[in-house]
Amino acid sequence: MKVLVTGGCGFLGSHVCEHFRKEGWEVISYDNMTKYELKRTGYGTDATRDFNWDYLKGLGVEMVRGDIRNMEHLMDRSTGADYIVHTAAQPAMTISWEDPEHDFTTNVTGTFNVMQAARAHNIPVVNTSSIHVYGNAINDSLTESETSYQRDPVAIGETQPVMVGEISPL
View: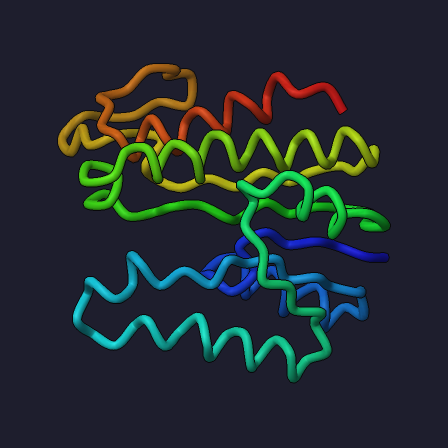
């Protein structure tokens, strides 16, 4: 079996790649290797993507530097995959406020592109998300049936891909 993992060098994606590789699958890590949100922390976390790249490569993962906003490249690299696990995202709250276009094009348009590539190749997709879909209502109780929460740019950027995934016929 062959799986393409978008955001393969990120926190979640790297663990997904590691899991499937250790299960004997062919794994493609598809990551743009941005360190934009990581450099801002001041804790040297920008080195994590490089570490993950080298670690996964050592496990035999096929490493591809690619951006989910580039439909043509994504379409080409997803050819032959049996599954796609979509973990790529712009996750930083601060960046969503400072650069909402970047946030939108990555989280919404990028997810749309992943779904289009999956549809074109008839590949099932596991679409991941984060706590940001719930917004910042810190003291409110959340229920599983809720469909609307307090929103901020990153919550909108994280929610729209979920909706794209829900309505994309595969």
